[in-house]
Image (cartoon, rainbow over the protein chains, first blue to last red):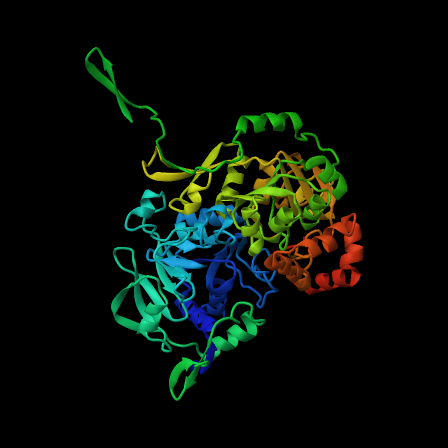
Length: 279
Length: 343
């Protein structure tokens, strides 16, 4: 079943990347929807049945009954089925304050060289000139308190910017020591950024470093879709494509209606090479 | 700091004395007045200390307890065990100038703003769509920036009778600058720490699974901050799927989430969260959810408000004429999970 798939889209690919990071020995606080939750659900179905995660409604370690109705990812019976505990938001924040949350998984509209998260506004904040979004929601608490934070976003120039239009949730802010000066617990912070095309970590100066690349793009293509030039690791990891098994679970059990995954370009295996299907 | 005590010129003891808390950085936004003593006085004077029946209709509760200019909290949202029927009643009664506690809100905030009821919101999260930028541009809406859990912590401070609580999140964000939070030097560890101002909302609306006529209420499953909302707020409207007897509640007191003395009105609101779900009781109505989301994404709520709010005079009429018996039976049937929700 672990056959590499020959047809998949960008969204499915990035969800599989994040899902593969997930391990049973850690506790996760997962953004309540989109790619982060899909990745956790996929991991739980495929390789980590005892995975424990929280969402911001204070559910602890559910065994969710997938698929969910549209938007019913929290405070809903299927999402919260057979949990270890049912609580509320302040309790989830307490657990994170205490240091139990090893990893947070979040999506972001923009990410800058210090891994800061923007979910508030693209463009100018003042006067409603920019395009306004919903706000940090629960992401600020996760990004501040989880030991390590994994971000998911798209590989687009407008999304990888030198400085976010707005910092809704903290990455490394403006460099080493900034989180501690802002009152955040020491030892916490950004860890990875995943896009359908690439994977980034951080250098010791807290700046993004390209560490992995998908087989259907080149380094130059990735760099073209960034507004700044990141550091590049001496040896780049190859991000393996989804397996047939992962896609089967994702498509038939988790995101049946394509609400999360039905976006982005398709990739196919053409003569042993992964290429964009629209090329 | 340590202070040496002297007898003549000879030090005889060292004592710890308080130092002034050092403010390192402050947000610059207006915030709802912090007044724990005022709230205590209000509780003594106005909260229902005696068990009295508070059953009333949606119309009566909103008329009596939601005032123009109020700071309003509601728990959960329009799609998940939120007080959707009460939100529709607030819009129907054309309440004005509300300031919304926008933790974990979504379409509800859009409906209240677009319905002309609210002009300020502390967020949290307020959903998506072109309506937000437009409302800000047209100066119909002022947004103050927090996060969901910072907002629930503010309510917790209010529910504890305290002026503030510390948190180790929110620092360093651009939201902080546009909030009422402060970064101070913690007098114990000397580390920087965020303080969040308490909120004691003027009014809160909370939808629950069960309540008795006095307001003792049970919420099953997860939630956002129903207990904090109830205890922190001056006036509290509880809407309940079921009205149960007090004897029933006394059989399993650990399941009482909200005590009667925090509650000012109890509204019987079966399917009160429609089009949303009440976990264990009924599923959401996906077309109903999509209809509301569609209005939000388009940024045009006229049709939605006409159909779902203004075309009827009450929740009962709404269920009968707009939702209909077949839909009600369907959402009840689709909620197959009962485990953990009923006794």
